[in-house]
Amino acid sequence: MPQELFEFIGKLVAYGGGTVIIAYGTFTLLGKKWIESIFQKDLESYKRKQNQELENFKYNVNSLFSRVSKIHEKEFEVLPEIWTKLHDAKDIISALVSPLQSHPDFNNMEEIDIRKSLENSKFYEHQIEELVSSGDKNKYYMERVVWHRINDARTTFSEFHKYFIRNRIFLTSELQEQFGKIDDLLWESLVSREVGEEAKGDMGGYGDALNLLTYRT
Image (cartoon, rainbow, N blue to C red; front, side, top):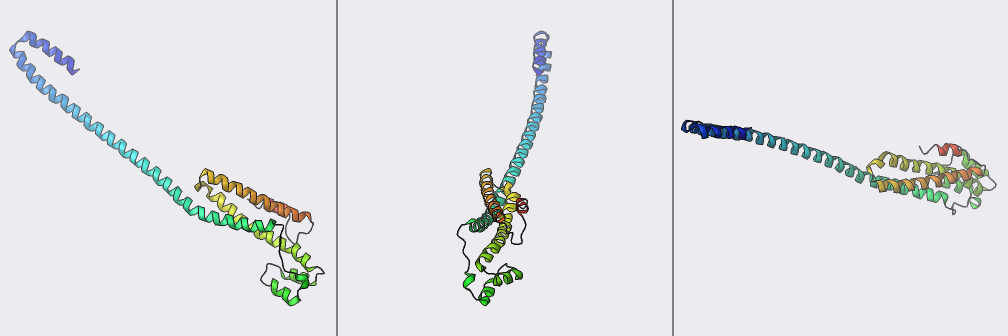
C-alpha cells in the first residue's frame, strides 16, 4: 500500500511542479518515519513473541530433564534394594529345591541334645515332643522342617516380588524384563517344591498348594 501511494504522488510531481515537489518531500519524510515506526513496533512484538517461545521451550526442557533425573535417581535407589531382595530369595529357594539337604543326626543324639539343637528353631513345642518320641527322628524332622523352610521361602520371595512389582516403573525396560524372568523362575521352583511335598501326603501342619498359588499376588 505505501508503495502505491508513493507512485501516485510521483505522478502528481510530474504534473504539479514545485509546490507538489515540496509537498511530496514533506510526505516522503513523514511517510518514512511512519513506516519505520510501524516496523519497529512489529520488530519489538516479534522479539517479545520469540523470547516468550524461547522461555516456554526452556521451561519444558527443564521440566522434562527434572522428571528424567528424578526417575534415574529413583532407579539408583531401587536397584541395590531389589538386588538384595533377589539374592535373598534366590539363596533360600535354591537351598529349598537342592537335592542335597543336610540336618543333624537326631537318631544318634541324646534327648537333651535334641532339645538344645531345636530350642532356637521354628519347630513348635509339640513338634519337638513328637520328634523326641519318634521311632525315626531323622525322618520326622525332615518331613516337618521342609514346611518351615517352604514358609520362610514364601515370605522371602514375596518381599522380592512385591518390591519388584511396586518399583519396576523406575527400571529400564531391559531390567524389567530380566527381573521379570527371574521372578517367574523362582516362583515356579517354589511352587514345584511345595506341590512335590504335598504329593507325599504329609502336610506337616501347613496349607495346601492352592494357598501358595494365590500367595504370589
